[in-house]
Length: 172
Image (cartoon, rainbow, N blue to C red; front, side, top):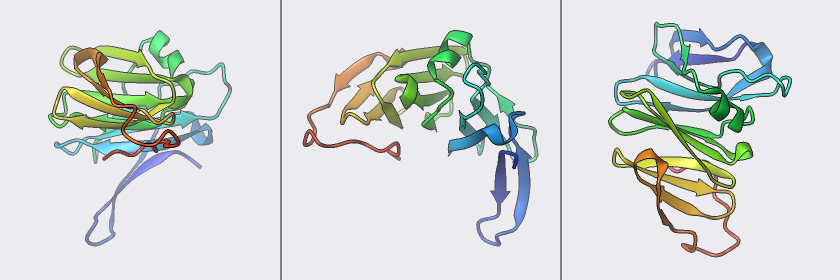
């Protein structure tokens, strides 16, 4: 089975496009997607092949076009531990954030400057932009975090609820 994105008309159920992703075949699966305001689809992948292999895990797709992986620097790619949890565009589609809970890493790509930023955050997975520059992050340890530009932690809201809380990866 080949990993793919399938575009379907929501009204008719008609298949509009089927886009195969990557060359790793059944060793990878799409974990999460997000759609930008201009209908570009970002996808985040989990790779279950050889642990030494470090395939690119984040890409972009548009209906009718070939998908492309966003080439990530080796250090940041390695920090993902071949496992992405969530992906989200900023509302203005100038940034893309990706979580890697197994790697305890959150990464943000700024399209205009072609710059990657990252922070370490234990079991961080849930992502949602609040405006174009504030990224909200939830963790499996019960934290809620707000960041500003370049993923600078602005506020930790870890005491918003009971200590037994563990957040899922969906905030939007």
